[in-house]
Amino acid sequence: MSLRSPLGRIKGLGIAHEGVGHWWAHRLGSLALVPLTIWFVASVVSLAGADYFTMREWMGSPVVAGLLIMLIVACFHHAAISLSVVIEDYVHHEAAKIASLIAVKAVTMVLALIGVLAVLSVLFGN
Image (cartoon, rainbow, N blue to C red; front, top):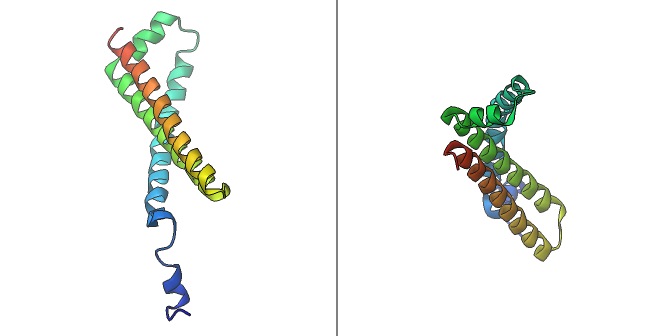
């Protein structure tokens, strides 16, 4: 028997007590993705029909490369948080949950790193 009130029993509950941090990270990531995605779509549409060298020149600009890197990082960070929430909510077997969370983090980090390295490769002309 607990002497705590019902509100006192539910405060501070949740996985590692960091639900608010995940929520804020997800919302801020979403907020960052809106202008970056609009910029990227508008840029790609304006370059429709461009040849390889024009696209490479466009990507070789430091401003464009920086924005592309921010888009890649924000996109994969947002995906990792979103997939982690789905796994935590719907995978009930603890070992499968932990394995899935590790796999999601690893895959999103590797894909983000590949994307960033590809942009840097174009930026520095390799």
